[in-house]
Image (tube, rainbow, N blue to C red; front, side):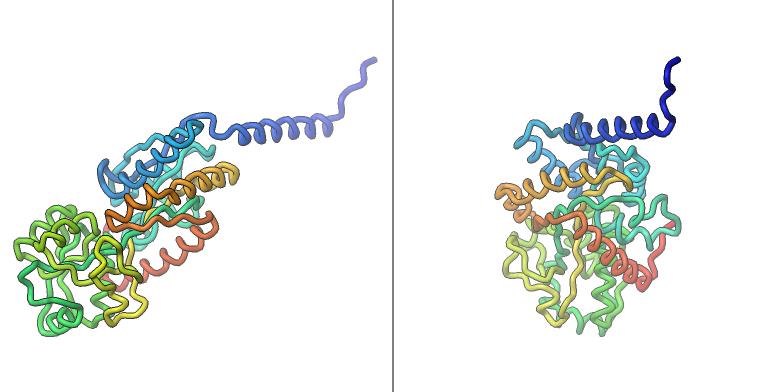
Length: 325
């Protein structure tokens, strides 16, 4: 008569086989292309940065292949929701940024995901400040002039859209300076810049790539940048912090995240190759040329950063009174 196998032994054996298969899968990771969801259209800042670092990794190590998948809409919420609900297998990531991970949770009445609970932090990719510009003929030549003008009358403030970093960052500055501004939202940086050039608005907190060429040709005047340090591409433009507003920072950052529950082994491997790419001279130079700074760091550091930024920008949105359905 054959001895029957004990149920407990069978369970232990099955568990060991499963764990061995999982470990083997992670040892061979990645064994297929990795999708990175960009929640904005092609050719925008988030898309360009994502493709830059993804291509850098792919070119330097043929083991890695990244496929960028653009899913725009609802201020980035549609694409990031797709990431949050994707398989937790280490083959889907997303490029979140200030708007969809720190501003939208307070700006939108209803969110399809929880920005702090539904994602695993992977790595902070890059950041860039805002550039406060006025038209070349404006009497505003510095932040002291701006405050004087803003106390005498209400200034019109252009932005690339309600809830953008330029909008909320501008409101943050107005509150700090003790002035009132009338927000004029546009459908993107292009129209906002055009009306600024035409004199329809007084001030504009813009992203560097959208205005650098016009600042350098004298069509626009840059008053200040919103990072703690000056940026290399506009070295003569002072920071808001050094112009009488210590500690003022408002940056548009991009970060790679994964669906909550993604295996740590996959997250750590992607973190390592992304940090390596961000440390390369060609990537650093390319980012500097557009007014950005390569960042990097650990998943834990990004996790702490996201919590701080979520709280800080959430407060700014509530104080601005902005709300979207």
